[in-house]
Length: 200
Image (cartoon, rainbow, N blue to C red; front, side, top):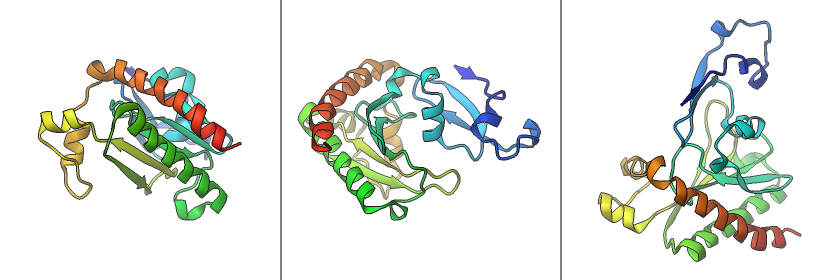
């Protein structure tokens, strides 16, 4: 499914509202349900999702949110339990934030990782901090390594090898959408009990 976003380009990135749409460089945001949306090159996916959340798949709605962080299923890859922890503050790097927020993010990473272990018996996960060149918005991937998929695909994803991409491509939305929904529900309940309580 593809949504035409030309009418929204100015609202997502209104640096120069007089510029014609043809002059704006664009890119495409791909989503796990097959939706693709054309946006300005400088648009940030996290900010876009917050602004247009009601028009996107409910599978990428936050499983936890407070005044400074948001946790949700990865928007592009249909991997159950693949959660993104990001700041609401639009910053490029963990080096750019105050220690209080850094502590909250570390706390959130701990409880998401603990939830993956306790809820889904995930013994191994990769945590990535991506600092993009264009439209950076600080976030962390928590990628669960599902042992049955690794065995089926004969891969053990490693950050320094291309097989991380092979692992990501081993999951399809059609096959895993119900598992994503269930993982979201379970993690939401877990974080409501553990993370929300600990932040009070």
